[in-house]
Length: 181
Image (tube, rainbow, N blue to C red; front, side, top):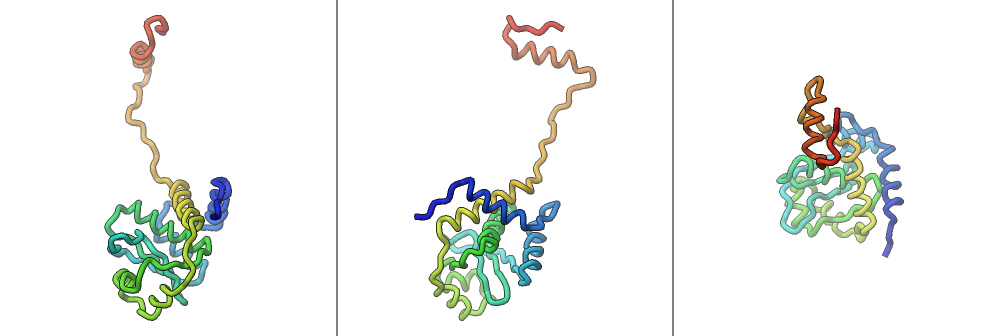
């Protein structure tokens, strides 16, 4: 069993992320367009209803394009994470694995040629635990880097707030430690 240290895992993901032109403000569709341009092949993002007990996303590499299918019935943030996870496989140059049997893939991506689907499913390569860990860490690190949440103060002390600070101090300090202005 191959084990990767957390430090090495994060270093590997940082190296992949450093090579990306991540849009600001962040937009996963724009990131995919930029990666597609660098790779000189389109990336199709396909929201689908995934079958029960199937993955929430899958990356299929065809001879002329990449297809990322992702669960349609989840939150936008989770969809971004799924897409980034699949990009992690793609950018880490993992072998492409299949999500299930041919019928599952045909339901997920009905526009793909059934012969292509069968070829995809007969590949012997499958993601290792390390490949999955790299893809998951990559997605998490990108979302950490582009975090759009900024805390906003819920309360601003009034100008000349010395009296407010004194009352707060009195509320939380023991009697023996009372502050004297």
